[in-house]
Length: 324
Image 1 (cartoon, rainbow, N blue to C red):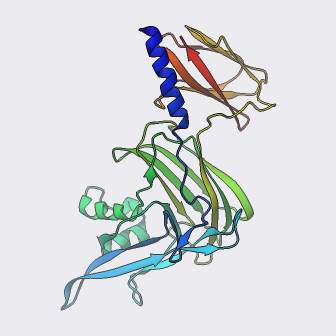
Image 2 (spheres, rainbow, N blue to C red):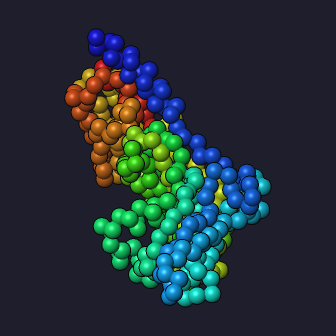
Image 3 (cartoon, rainbow, N blue to C red):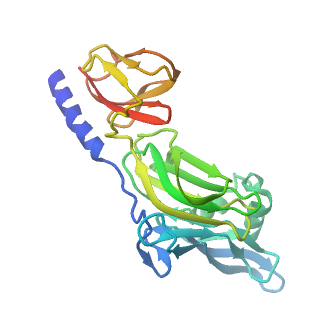
């Protein structure tokens, strides 16, 4: 029976290693109607308000924040995000929102004008989180993302950022399981990047099982400058699977296979951290801010193949650990 479990776990481990999600149109080479395929760069819907004599009135609004650019990191095209006016034109209810790019498709929303005003003027904290009717419709402005079986370790992309005044761009990503977020990743930057630079947002619970993953890219904050520009290209997920050992990251793992414990013994004296993950993406052992050799107890683990991730000096070593 123990050998059967061991064999099944090895088979599932191989399947898990292949269950990596590729982001569609990650280089923004494919466009239709001036919009990038598989991505959403616009929001649309109805803003409702009450007008004299007319009474309740639903005003249709739509805005596109993205455009195709030949200023690319690779290939022919990239995505350029800029702020745009959103609301009722020629009125005081016309707001400048930062450029927004999202992975997947988004629906249309219908929200009261007062909700938009509170969001823009006072931030999300000013909204009554218990008033679900308004907030639920706002969620339609968030793109659905794409199917994903296992949360990535990192989200990486190449960006060029030209902020004006004190703008800050943000990258927000989260994986979901049955509609509930299970892991988040966040990156923000307010410094000028005049040439393409690769940036990384690390998920706080990598390898967690999920059924979808979302990406939201913002060119600035709610007080954005209309001239701030954000260029995005070559977006990818990094699962840290199959990463080979770096010359400067030399770590001994022994004994392997093991029955009760194994030792992590780095050659370098620099501090490091590790995570031991099972085939479902669940972290079964971890350690942070470590120095020198440590022993990892695996006596309580089911026999099988586990993935060990060791990070030291911004480098990652991936090893398979077999528990018998």
